[in-house]
Amino acid sequence: MKVKTNIMLLVIVLLSSFLFTLKGYAENHENRVVVESNVSSIIDLETLEVENSTIVKLYGVSIDYYRKYLQDYKEEELSQTETGLTVGVSKAYFKGESVDHLINRAQEFYESLLLGKRVYLEKIPGDTSYIVYLDRERKQSLNQLAVKYGMVVVSEKYHELPDLLIQQEEARNLKAGLWDIIVYRKDNGGWGESNFAQVSFGLLVINFILSVIIYIYYLKERSLLGVIAVYVTWLTTIFFTTGIYVFNERQLFFWAPPTIVIIFSLLGVTEFILFIHSNSKRSLIYITVKMTLFVILVVVGFGILYQGYSNAARKQTEVAYSLPYFESNNERYEDPQGNYIAIPVNEYQTLNLGEVKFADRVKNKYKYYLSLKNALYYSAVTFFTVGYGDFSPKGILKIVSVIQMLIGYLSQVILFSLVVSKIASYGVTTPVANEHLINEQRTVFTSRKIRFKRKKILSKYVVYVIFIIVILENLYIWSKVLFPIIN
Image 1 (cartoon, rainbow, N blue to C red):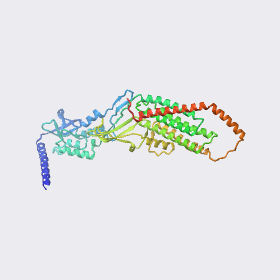
Image 2: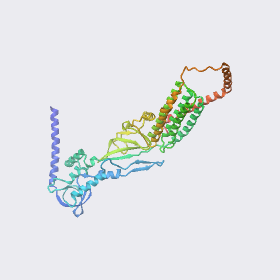
Image 3: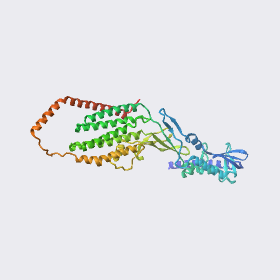
Image 4: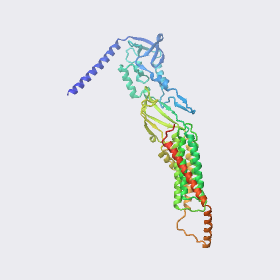
């Protein structure tokens, strides 16, 4: 009971103070001197010119938002990096009414309402500004109308004007005028630049040459182990291309990854074509492993290519600012430019940024990032010519996607069906040759085996050494890409 009494007393005191303030404001309002005059020109939305070239400043209102827009937002803020790329912040743009359009509309409203018309000026004691009334009874003022229609805001210096503050709150709730305007800007950002791309490209060339050597060594033998070694080497070479995308602002050697992926894919297709036209037959395990490795090569190879291009694309971050105080909303969207795979917004990464430049109140940023999972998904549906439409290529990746579709169509419809028809079945008997001929051929084969034994052993160990070099190179480049601490 005592608590309720204290609360009631507090409410009564606050109401009394508020009523006393209103009473004092009303008494002062009644005692002020009113001067009649004609408006000769509109200088701006808070300044008029009346008879005798008298300048009249509207009391309690401000167009500081427009000055801030002209000073900080209307012009672009761009600069050149050391690599010659343009970075910085774009000029403001709008998705609805613009600030300039609002100012022009308000100017026309002022002119139709005031020019050549009689107004009643009430000077504020101790201030150089006026309340501009439109009628002799002083029931309607320009100050209130401008605030009500969202053309101006209540100045931060005047918080004791309840009538203007009430009008401003209504304008805010109704999204009138400037309260419905959003200013957008795009931050082009900038990349880092290092010599890591040059180093990666040099190692990639070496890796590619070694993988071709391994392929040549195993080309004639075509054993199951040889096929596995070849495809593993190709895959590790493709993984090696990820180093080109790191800190590469000028996009140097970006042609290399798609070239290598397409070459390896075509070599795989060529292998199947040669097998189809050969007289040899292979076991079901051999063909299954080779086909599986080929599919993995194409899907993973193109997937890594899509991910590398997309995440290395230049990003533009769109920031939205709400008038009149240019408060940033809680979302920033980062969209890439150039060559990338477009993904749904719900696949963007959400980052908590806290206070950031150009948007002090931004807490979340929706960052474009093509994950490896999504890259492999898009690569798989492209290879199998499914295409659900949720992901789409942009720029040069359109051409790359078409090439992958052609490889996928050729592999599924033509090659795989023909290859399966050539699989050798187990248990098929073959005519037994003459025993004398068999012994004679065995003797010739044994002599050749002894003659070329040293050369075959040498070739095998050469391949082993090359394979180890390839693995070590890839471990080095992966450590730089996955754990980048590059000076």
